[in-house]
Amino acid sequence: MSDAIHEMMKTKPEFGNLYLGDTYDTPEGVPHAWGDRICLGSRWYFYWRNFNIFRITGTLGEHGKLDRENQIYYSTQNISLVEACGGKVHLRGLDNLRAMKQQPAVLLGNHMSLLETAIFHAFVRPHMDFTFVVKPSLMKIPFFRGIMTAMNAIVVSRDNPRQDLKTVLEEGKKHLDAGQSVIIFPQGTRSAEFNPEQFNSIGVKLAKSAGYPVIPFALKTDFMQNGKYLRDLGPIDRKRDLWVEFAPARPVTGNGREQHQEIIDFIVDRLKTWRSAEAERNV
Image (cartoon, rainbow, N blue to C red; front, side, top):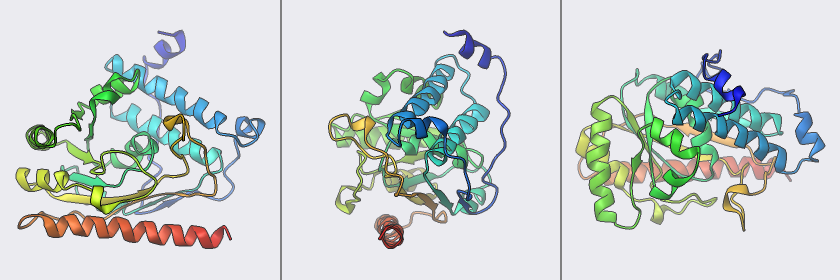
């Protein structure tokens, strides 16, 4: 372990929650990082800084030091990095998380890029503890494994839907009963386009079975795009704003189909609105 990381692990970083209201928008006049200027607006400064944050948080996780304060602090650093590279961040519906008063829920939404897992701690964790449902291959990635282990992530195969459902229902209920919310991306894989047919109902089934509410969320994080050849090192598009919005919590009733469709409709509507506004601005 490097001396710098060893020293960093001795003390907790000082941090303040920037997201105190229902909404947040990147303020005007955020300084453009000199490193990004030197790199001529390419992707490489962003990924260098992003990997350094990832390395530190992963090392903290591997050594049992990735607590709530560190998670929030370094996740906020990822948002600041987006802004320092010319990106605009917009958060909506934070009061819907705050209204939960630290009570657990199942959070369900679309999955677009790696930014989701990097930034959610900054504005979700102040209001609720949570973990992710992830696939086994992610647990083999250095540093990411440490982060997910620290969060006690739920691992599913993605090869056997019946076994995955059983795992999510059993392990998810244990997490929820222990006070930890569960975040699920029912698409299964990240994609710039949202296909409702690929949005499975496993999250709604967990909420119904365990007796907890669902919180729908929609996001647009194609500021960081998936690469054609190196999927995790795609281009950065500064014309594409980063949006995340949370809808109010709701119980799952009946067979859950109504709530499942409501979540899909919410995501489709928000993506349409955000992309329309973005297209008009970039004409």
